[in-house]
Image (cartoon, rainbow, N blue to C red; front, side, top):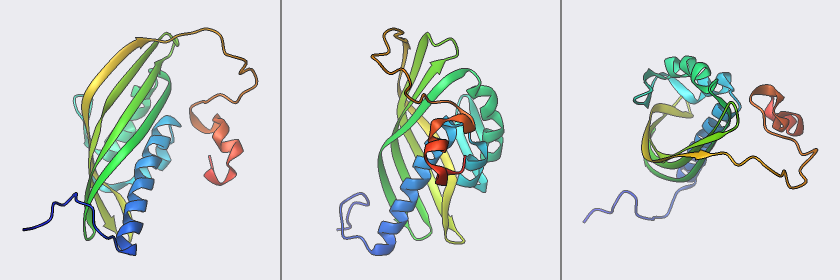
Length: 178
């Protein structure tokens, strides 16, 4: 009887390193989207990669990144969060299901759109580096909610998130190189 590909097993150091690299890739994607760091996003995909965010976009990853600025201009702020990541590795190829939440705040700050879903990812390691070969989003649930605007609970002076290189993370984490 063959073992289920998702069943727990003893990992080699090489497999553990590959899994850590793939988690970094997924986390860097969320950072790149939320900070509007298009240059970073381009490094996460192979040149021949595909991104599928149907019905909004499906095609080359390069075309997806070219499309993003216009789409993201509709949102004052976003936060893409990856939760769990299940991976199956096969040499220099891997597949993964990543559960995710994508929060969006409208430009006028009055509405929140929250997409709950999963990414079905195909990864490839080429020249020793793991990148997306194909990324597709599966929507499980969506919420359209009012944004509660009110008391800031004494947060005056706290650094607030911004898109791009003006985000406080870049001044507070110099190695991030914003």
